[in-house]
Each structure stands twice: as structure tokens, then as C-alpha cells.
Length: 313
Image 1 (cartoon, one colour):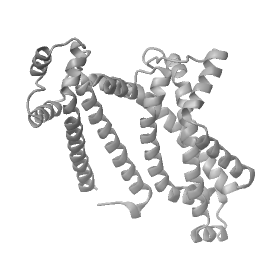
Image 2: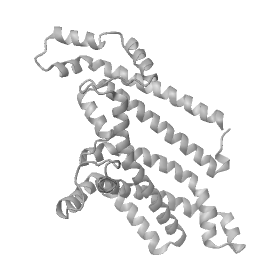
Image 3: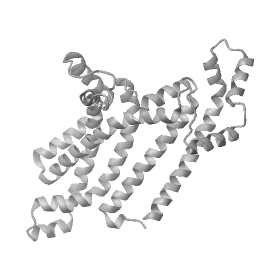
Image 4: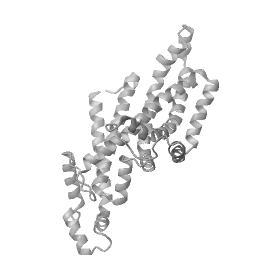
């Protein structure tokens, strides 16, 4: 298992280097445009060249990249071109905001989807139709439209929750809960739609297997069959779906944070892309790849714990 973890971490490192190099190569074509953005439209060619020389953007791309890598290894991702704030702490701060929304949304999604999916698969009838209806609504209704409706109803009409803004939990727990309620609700509805369908389908397949019939003939209770056997066997593929759901929510943060005015990772990435803030974009790419690598590795290890046949050595 240790060798597998080391192999995955090595593969993640190679992927990180590859992605950052491609990103750096693509951004290198816009160095002059960024310099013009900093200096303004009236900048002279001489002033532009001077700024590029000061920033080191006139040097060979490989030389610049390797210098950036050597600094990044020491935890120095540079500073924002426009705010002069250090990139590393800024990205971590924004990432904490995003995770404070995604993690509660994922936990609620997993609990609701598991209960609803297992209940629908084991009971059928009206409960099964309800689960399918919820999945259909979640697929059909766009997340952006749902966000707008919730803001209009809960924030504008009823004045129960703030429409925009974010309050850190360290400042006010109640304020934090109020500020994330609508964004989390939007993510949960979309997540429950996909995850419930996956768990329901997997549980139906498991409950039709021969070992379930054998357990029933031995007098094992339905609850024991569902919880101890079928759900455990269905858990491995469901975990993979959960990891994909996490990554999907992470990507959706771009829209959610801009709609609700949240100072998170997605809005930070969006603004940096618009401005051409090269150090910030590279820092965002690094933390994004690291997060995805950790999530995928954790999922594989959890799958090995749930399903011994899936374990690697």
C-alpha cells in the first residue's frame, strides 16, 4: 500500500509539473499585454520593454519557469502583479472560503443521497418514484436559475438570509451559517440529483444478487442485509461518484461565488484570469491540482478499505 501511495504521489507531482509548464507556456505569450494593462493604454513601447525587463518577462521562458519552480518548492509563489500581495497565503485564504461551502454541501449531499437512494432501492413504490422525481428535477433545473430564485425568495422577498457576502466562522458562527445557506442549498440540490440516482441504481443491483437471496433464506433481517452487506458492496463505486461530485462542486464554485459575491477560490481565479495576473493564475493551478490529487488518492484508499478486491499493494 505504501508503494502505491508513493507511486500516486509521484504521478501527481509529474502531472503538477506538466500542467504548470503548459500553463506557464501559454501565459508567456501575454506578458506584453499584462505590461500594457499595468502601465495603461498610453504606455510607450520603451516603458513597456522596461517594465518587462524589471519583471524578468523578457528572459527565455524555460529560464523563467525553472526559477518559478525553484521558488515554489520553497513555498514562494510570488506576488500578485496588481495587488503585490503574496500568492500563497492569498490562495489558501480563498481556498478556505470555498471549502467552507463545498464540504458542508458534500456532507449533506452524501447523507441525503444515501438515505434516499437506499430507501428507494429497498422499498420501491412511492419512495422510489419520489427519488427519481428529485433526481429529474435536479437535472432539469439549472443551478444558476435555482440560485436566482432562492435569492429572490429568501433574501429579497422574505429577508431571511443575506443575498451576497461571506462571514468567516471565526468571526460569527451564526453569520457564517447564514451566509453559506443559499450557496450550499444550490450545490446540495444538484448533488443529490446525481448521487441519489447512482446509489439507488447500485443498491438495486446489489439487492438482486445471489448472496442476498441466500441471506434472506437464512432468515437475515432486511435491515441487516441492506446496511451490513448491500450498502457496503455498493459503497465502493458510490465513493468514486462522491469524489467526482466534490470536483464538480469545486468547479461550480466559479459560478456560485460570483453570483453570491463570495471571496473564494473560484472568484479569485476568475478575476486573475480577466486581469492576466500570471503569478496568481499559476498559484491557483498548483493548489487546484494538489487538491484533486489528494481527493482521488483518498478515494482510492477508501475504496480499498471497503472492497478488499480493490486493494492495491
